[in-house]
Every structure is written in structure tokens, then in C-alpha cells.
Image (cartoon, rainbow, N blue to C red; front, side, top):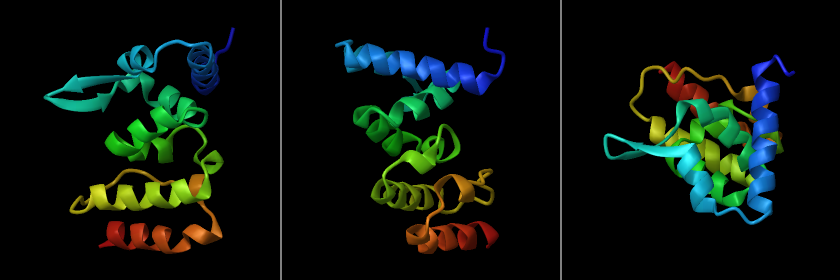
Length: 130
């Protein structure tokens, strides 16, 4: 029995990846991970971390998260395993979607840090400090 939530989330994500690799419809899995609320496509709260782990192995899930909730890819799972060019685009997308917010509530310097992302990280820090 696995007691720590992050271990359960990771193992659940691996199970979903196995389902996808064995031919289960992406649409079926997306219906489990995502839903509509107030006419907006959202990630189900209980599936946030699981979807981030799945995104490491599945481009369609990764792209969906990139569009609707980039902060999940930054804050959950292991963002350091995402391709560097995708991390840069992800961070820039998050900055763009976060404009005008007073508080972002996330600290992901360690999870995505790389010398090639320094400019984007500095921009994010400056926008949250203002």
C-alpha cells in the first residue's frame, strides 16, 4: 500500500500511459482528466498532478495542459523532464496568461530551471514583484 500521495499520483499516471499505449482512446482519457466548468475547459482538481505526470509521456495531454493550465505543468509532476524548448514556451505562455494578476502562488524556479531559461525566469520574477 502506497501512503504518500505523490507516489499514488505517479503510479496512476503510469497506468493511464499504459492504457494510452495499449490503444485506449485519447478522448476517453481526456474525459477523465478534463471537464467543463462555466463553459470553460478545465483540469479536474483530483487529476491535476496525474495529468502533469502523463504529460511527460504523452504529447496530446501535454499540449492540452499547455493550452488550458500551464501552471500545472510547472508546479506538478517533474517539469525538469520536459524538453527545454517546451519549458521555455511553457513559461512564456504562463507569463502571458498571468498578466495583471497580483499573486501567482507558485514557485517553480527549481523544477524548470536551466541556464537557457534565465531570461524567462527573470521576467516572471519581475512581473510578480511589481
